[in-house]
Image 1 (cartoon, rainbow, N blue to C red):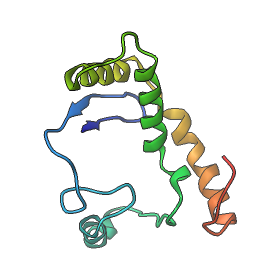
Image 2 (cartoon, rainbow, N blue to C red):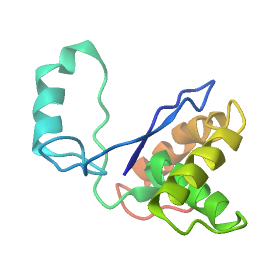
Image 3 (cartoon, helix red, strand yellow):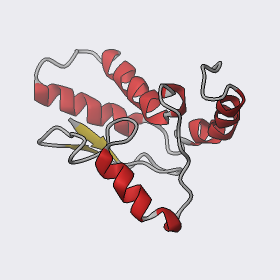
Image 4 (cartoon, one colour):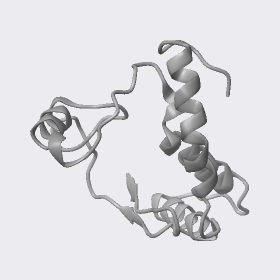
Length: 125
């Protein structure tokens, strides 16, 4: 498993984790009990938007993952071992340009407005 570090300006690092993540140790794609409890305890520190279930189009992490996997699939030669895969993932990650996330982040207000208009139902991409 890999963990990414990214921001508005920079893609940061792609880090290999020696373990898998579960709802007890970190967030599932939407929210685990541990995360929900932490958010409730710290809710006065920031604004938390409640995302409707079944709304993967609102999660830019999935878009980043798809772009990364597509970049690895285009590599030649294809990775054959877990270490080859890690190297291909890290190399592909480093090839994303600085500011790569600006476009998907800037699209979020429009996407969120569409989701609100649809009352949590399906929206167009």
